[in-house]
Amino acid sequence: MKKFTSFFLIMTMLIVALSGCTSNNNNDQVVNEGSSSEETSLDGSTLTVVAAYGGKEEIFAAFTNDTGVNVEFLDMSSGEVLARTEAEGGKPMADVWFGGGADSFIVAGEKGLLEDYVSEEEQFVDDKYKGDNYWTGISLVTAGFMVNTDILEEKGIEAPKTWQDLLKSEYKDEIAMADPAISGTNYAVVNSILQSMGEEEGWAYLEALNENIPFYFQRGGEPPNKVAAGEMAIGIIPMSGEFVAMEDKFPVMTIYPEDGIPWVPAGLAIFKNADNLEAAKAFVDWALSAKGQEIIRDMDPRVMVRNDVAIPELMSNINLANLMDIDLLKFGSQRDDILEHWSQIVGN
Image (tube, rainbow, N blue to C red; front, top):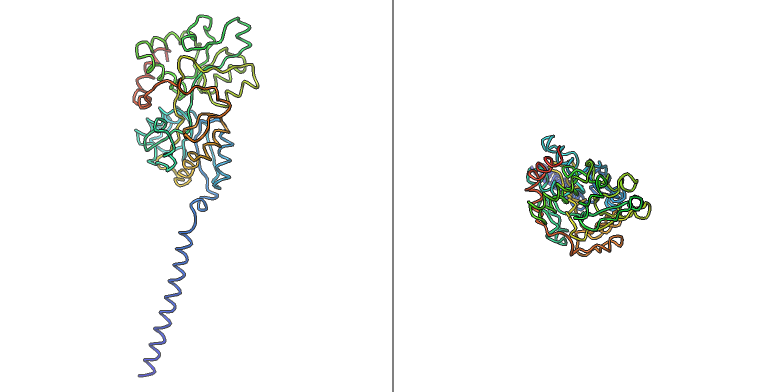
């Protein structure tokens, strides 16, 4: 009996010891998993982005360098993104939506196409540049004019200084503008004009402006490229760094309208049901951080949404006090009605 008891005690001690080893091994595994940083867990993963932003290759390369997350991207205007996402029943075409007019982001958020995510970095963003929980501004897209100085000199006409100047008869068929149903910047132009002038006067102005525009381009970047190439005398353009910098390469000049600068935040959002949600959140955090904002600004000079990030030197002549006074929420709520009225004006 004593031998049995001794054997039983020995076996019990062995079982306890083995249990302890197993427990310690499991604890080590939990500790190791918990101590891995989010950045380490994302290292080598791939983020897909649909983008409408200048300098995106360099921006994404900087993000990859900082986080180890690879980026694949598709270039597409905001109106196209919204239309395609709706047409596909909300199936996301990417993880992140980077750049483009706020109107499409507002509508997408209202229709449940975007992820509910608020970055801690948003505390440093001015409230007027934020959306709701579904998107935020990343930078300001302002609109102005680009003129081809050779064409103006050849035709003996002066460069426009105001929106009212664009109605002059000498500009007949000389003005390039992108379709506001596709280009977020040009939708911002139309909506800002309607808000600043009032519905009746604003629509009368846009009808008169239409008389000087031979046709509407399908991408917001086409008017500045056509003006730089000498195919059009005047373009209504996004005043981003990539286009302002054309002054150093082509006979062009960019102009901020004296009677008001239309503007809209370039949006940033995560698509609902994104495949790589954690990497998407990491990109939003990075893009809104002071470092990320400075990198994005330097790759495509714009006024950024963070108050602690300086205006780029290339755009130092902008007068922010001259930004049109707009209600950003109307960009989304009025979108369908405005674009329907617009199509009637231009005969689409």
